[in-house]
Length: 283
Image (cartoon, helix red, strand yellow):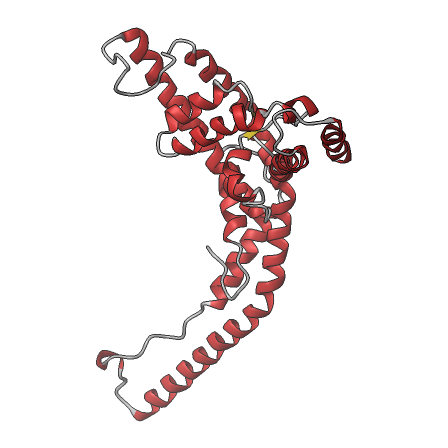
């Protein structure tokens, strides 16, 4: 059941559903609070008796008077329940949202072993597949290719499921999208931290950025997208906790800040190198 009235617990309840489906431990107070939410919502939506029909009309005026009094009492009770229930909606919503948010980091951490296991399997399978993964170039009639590809499809589907569940959990912590436009990538992969040599030699522009761009291009091709990630020589594939997404986004900003002070000279001078070092040391 979903709370409304401006006090939304949809993200919290969706996160609990993920935890329960995956067999993650849900502390007892959370189901208790959710049961309280159900009680309040039933009261908040209590309806008065339905309008009488011709068949419901009594035979005498005395019976009609009694029926009117009974229905009036039922209307008053329903209205009172709806009004009083709203007093409990906000505190219950705050309690449930806080209880669930407190569990998000640990729930996401519990998804990591399965994620790592699947990535390891996919990385092993990727070695059995051609370097070029263009569908038009793959010999689908070769069982040495089609068999590992079929397994890779299953693993990619499972990885997407884990990432989707992680996003549901992250929304319950209020940190969904905290990594900016690249939050989806940072949820599963981390850029290397820049060194002075990396900045001087344009590692971000020459090696890392093309990998990021290719990952974006493959957004509608999950199997190739995951294979691209596990074959990366520059990205670390690891499921992020909510705060780690923000940290990973900050690494890219550090790259850009260091590149900005490097300047555009083919070979930066000593002053530019000192500026790069200062930026990296200050991080």
